[in-house]
View 1 (cartoon, rainbow, N blue to C red):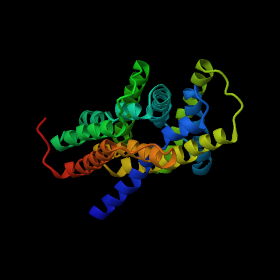
View 2 (cartoon, one colour):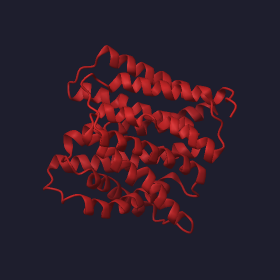
View 3 (cartoon, rainbow, N blue to C red):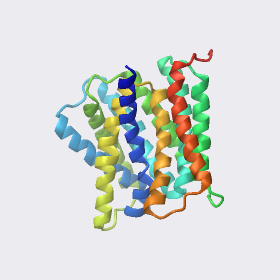
View 4 (cartoon, rainbow, N blue to C red):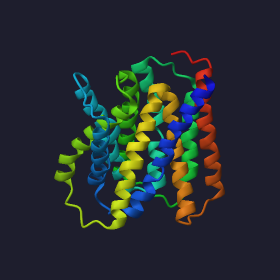
Length: 289
């Protein structure tokens, strides 16, 4: 039982670890200034490809649910993610989004009746502190629109995470991922066309970045993420997202030759401790509501 849970956690953790490369790919490989178009091109082709594989469409109540979850987990969330990534330093964007596990804890109480555990709250707060130590620098700037976009994205994915578990889809994770990716991509098409100009001529690097974000950063990772949500509590899955900024910083250090400071090393340690505490929380008596 414990071994199975640990395997589920390890596989689910791959998703946010890969998402940590989003900031690097966005800034280094994609044309700047097209957050909505990039989000659409990340979701729709991957979703259509998976639909061709699973060959199954939603039915009944799952049509509106799929589009709502597609909006929460993909179209709105990714649009806000890219706006935040373009308008804020990657570290600031990651710190703002780190509030998501705390939101998931509260929503899990409302929608799933899950108890609010003191250790979960402590782990969530420690994760935010760790991310702040990891990525914030004295020269980091706070763009108000970027901060609001980051907060909106965190709330959106928190709702998507909890509702994905609450509604318990009657299909395998691959099919569930295909439905949501395709729905999220479809919703983004008119928004991208209306609010943004046409993309410039894309380079080989641009195509490579989009292919990576769609196939690896979307189809593969969200399959693992939704698989984890079908087997684990949302309050255990959401804190794994703290691994994303850790990977982002390590990639900056290893790929872009950015300096890794002692404060950042401390931040990595605090983040890892917070993730560990979040997995201990279910074994501890919950606080009274």
